[in-house]
Length: 311
Image (tube, rainbow, N blue to C red):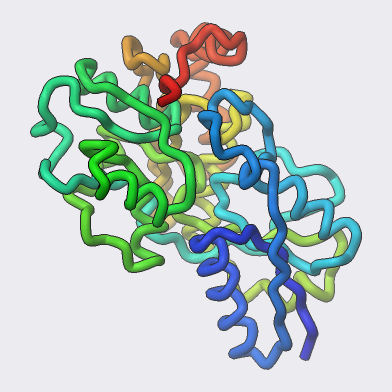
């Protein structure tokens, strides 16, 4: 049996994820330890994510530890992992996915539709902001950074009337008390890879790869490949207003893609069906670009888009 060192961010959710993989590896008889690594995204807490604009902001320092052989594998929320990895790395396994959809949380209101005019909603995601604004342009969207506990506390203190978080993290941490609505993907399309964990290793490390192969969940891997191919075709990272959600039934893949203006004034949405996940994602990405997505993304990358106002 092997001695394996896992690199992980230090947030409550990241450590849950790392400990989850640790327990599965220990069941196989491996000796496992976790090294906590602080990433760029963990250090910048006073700026909306969309304003930071750094690809790999939650992974760069962990990859450096992999390269230096201080750790043997990294456990990532797959939505944080850039679609194009450096040639030194590869994804060894993609685990069975949690619910990929976003959740609406509030102390006083049971749905997005029932929020009062000018209600203050917390999210630092342009993707969530855009789709929220499309259905409720009257809402006031404000940044919301910090770990899950911090975000929930801010809502409980009354700083926000509601917040939007990923269902997966709330379910994993058992913090589901304030979930009022799990938002359907055709209303708020999730981020590519949301709810799935990606296990990253050094490319060519066949010994570690062999120990991790049992973690792969093929339906999740197929779905995520389609979503990441779409995101890659659009040239987007996890902080741009792009959504991708795939469902796999047997050999059939259904893929929803969204590109939106951050103010919600234009939301391009399309659905395609296919069997080859990468081809399907690329095909849908090209379609969205041709329909106006290229102009939207130029606005965003050109920094003419308005991120959520700073408090």
